[in-house]
Length: 295
Image 1 (cartoon, rainbow, N blue to C red):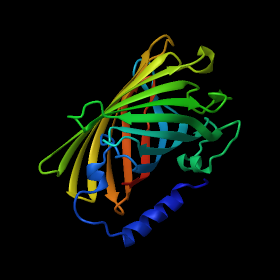
Image 2: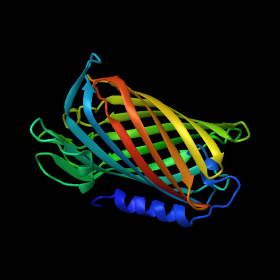
Image 3: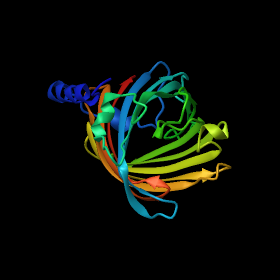
Image 4: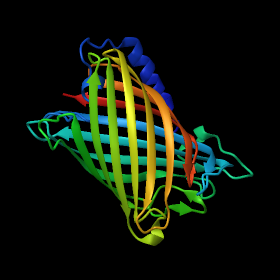
């Protein structure tokens, strides 16, 4: 998995050069996360999120510089339609993580997270969570409203080793509500996502146990063609103290694009910037993902 983005970018060049998608509504227009797959159909998605920070805010929102910290998360998802009326999908999500922590004496470039190193002094990598998941649409009259529920099981031992943070050592009951609405003859689309995660486990294993995490996200997309979309997005997220004596919040804005490479495969690239928060890093994310939908 060393230097993961290099083959990904090569695939992008090849597909853009040779793929000729059909006209008409594409997967990126029709099958948003709000829309479930019919029985027998399946999808696979790989989303790569690189977050890096050199600033952060304390509990009062005061901003200061800090040594660079970088977290690369690779999210692999697979879902299949299991109901004849396209109202239930089942799947699994696997998260891989590479974390890289700099010090005042030595800064590690963000892209070094692509090495997936394990070093007690500054780097950790491996599988972080495995999550059985289900998606469903509870209301037949609202097919663009769907819910997703996952149980994220940590598969690593220590949250931090010698100050090198890996991921929350928590079992996470992750719940999402999706809704989208198209308008202006389908040229524009509004997509919303409301999430609530409940993190639990022994108090000594994670600072986040006995807390809730609630991000609210909005995406506004424009389709110059059926195979291409540009979007802007915003998110506000809060960690709610449910007994862990820690809370935080942050707000970010971003922009991105999706391109339908073939009838089944699409590419997404995006960037987001953290604007402000409390008890939070104020970094940036750089994202690239592929999604394959077999109808």
